[in-house]
Image 1 (cartoon, rainbow, N blue to C red):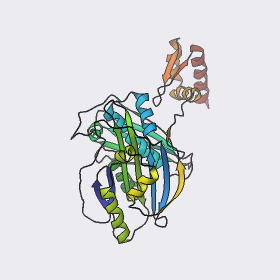
Image 2: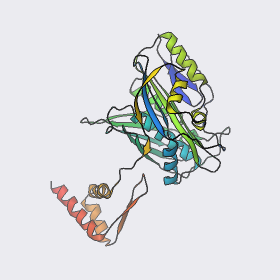
Image 3: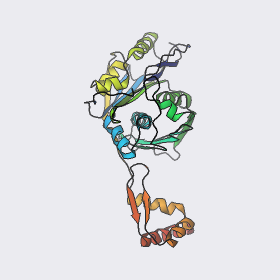
Image 4: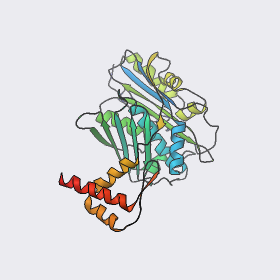
Length: 334
């Protein structure tokens, strides 16, 4: 057995046993047209090789398409958001409890500026972009997600109900998202991982396929097993190709593992879910503090607040703003 290190392969960033770095062109979602995936969104978690490998695979087309419509995102921006949302769904599924919360945030110098995604162990995901109207020229016939993101930092926060949430941050490797998540696992959690993500946006600017898979190698593996997985990952089709051809998450995992047997431990439905509510928005106002609320009350007009994630607007009357000011004053006294 040997220590894993980086390898790049179409649409996949992963680690293998050798000390040499191999580079192959990274496949991305083509900037063209194709038929829509017929596979409904789904996600599975599985264990392999006596639980030494943990795998998660998902089809997220409907979830990503919903996010695209909500934000009016252009193709390149949609691909960037969709990849991080799919990655969030996969990582959220690593949690044993549905209430465990995950936050992924990319702050970057590219035109999208930032991407923020929240997910939980139940498969619920929401996200937004700093600038959704970003559509760079294609690069080699592919959507230029790396160019839209550029240099920056990936921040990860896990809230598992303990006193202090876990947080980590790593520099972006390429802005292609999958590589950056794999880098985070190795650098911050010391877990060799394979991450593959894909979003296909058709010529009519509609998301027609999205999905991904994640493999985590939790122990030093036998030489022949590592070789087998390495060879499988080197020839596996891009995620978007598999999704458009109707692959289920189970079939994607079978391809990634080269037919190795695995046991499914959980089925989850990845879905868009926003937790915003009028009550939450009220508490956001209170958190601004009394001084800021006094200025709003002085305007004597309706105040509209819009959720950054789902764009739902909440209107608060002058009388309601006075009540929120009173709550803020009471909070300061306490």
